[in-house]
Length: 381
Ligand code: ADP
Ligand code: GN1
Ligand code: MG
Picture (tube, rainbow, N blue to C red):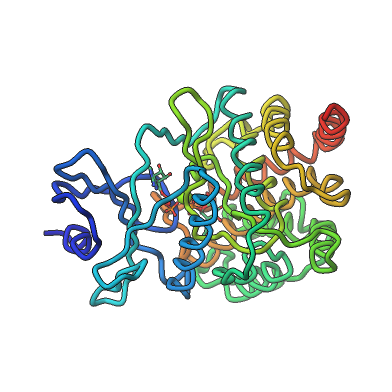
């Protein structure tokens, strides 16, 4: 028996288990589909304890928010308890496992193509936030500093300084925040290897946008953008849809915390408006598609009726912020030697970083148009 087949016996699954098989494309946890002699299937997950340092606290968050959503008669994840009444099982290696009901008649997507599906996705994010807007109580901060760019800059500077995998060629100076003009150019005549040269340029793309990102983050620090319950990981594959294309519910609730709902909107625009997969190898193909942007935003704003003026004004910038942050996180993981995200080949994180930068540049080029679109949608509501 595999680990997963043994582990599943510790959860209160009423039917005999017939099969346990790996599932999904998540970058963080290990997910398995559990089949039974009955009709009900289940999801078993090994939670990544290196990333989530307080899995019991995280599972308690998930239990409380799903209970809140269910009490309103809405579909959500249904956790299963272990034989001793916990929401997680700890194995002999100290690994944490959780189990929930597999939501039948659902579809999940890695890529969104039709405006209908994208609009539904927007409604899904808005509905999730609205359902939790009246949740009382404090949630455990499962990943402190998750979308805190001040913290990300500290981590990034450290990664560049250490150059743990030697990918920056051990060269000092790339962690300087104000690069010399010449360092941002093609590097012609430089003695550095092409890979190192590109990497240093990618690092400079981080530093030159730092002031604008800090301006946005200060609005969160000073409370102009309030903290509300947010999902914090709203990419397309973290929502389930019905076969008719309407949205069913949010899944992957590991990161639900008190933070800004703009992180959800921004992350979703990063995911839904991209014309290519997140790991497109040719950055020349990657674009922010204005039609997808409009469809998502219409869906989102039809449900998220609680936003204040500062939040509305910063919707568009939140998409740039999260795309930039994701660019930083992929690049940082590549520099660190791929210690955080699952990769399928050695340059996977670099490929992802290049694609996010291309997406960010496309958003920057369409910034005014995006602002106008949001304005028009808001006037029509
Ligand atoms: P990760 O944290 O690694 O991203 P997820 O929780 O997002 O893992 O799960 C990975 C995939 O498994 C999802 O994209 C979805 O396709 C599927 N999945 C997860 N939970 C359920 C569920 N309760 N019902 C149906 N499918 C699910
Ligand atoms: C991870 O867990 P998953 O695969 O849904 C990551 C997100 C990133 C995303 C990029 C806890 O999401 O922050 O945006 O990959 N989750 C965590 O695809 O770091
Ligand atoms: Mg996921």
